[in-house]
Image 1 (tube, rainbow, N blue to C red):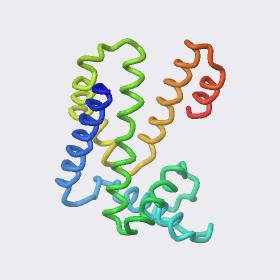
Image 2 (tube, rainbow, N blue to C red):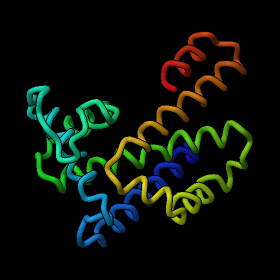
Image 3 (cartoon, helix red, strand yellow):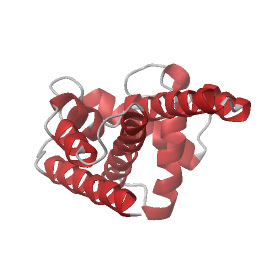
Length: 174
């Protein structure tokens, strides 16, 4: 399908540009967020190495202060590619760009013109500083947005079709 091909092309461009913007960061200090960056890496490393529950983190917060699914997914990919911080950063960047898909499908479902949708969505994502910040920073917000928007899409689609299983899946995903 040509429309799906366009979707993947624009998603690929978004990922490449986001990776390129991340490459411009010379020092991950975050103006006070450096501890958050390290804490996120430590949490992913915790799941990767199956460390004891009493493990301390640099921010002094407990393990489940942040949602664990993001760090579990990151640790899975780190187990395949390596446990270094750059691997964690690139893995989290890739996971955080996945929000592109449910936004596309939800916009198409709500009647946005499909002919200009990939271009518009690409421009909205790449020129929006908040989207770029959420994609490059290794936190669970974008993955939570991915699940919430996927849930909204599935629920809306199931509601229109009167499909209870799809509505239930939407409630579960969101």
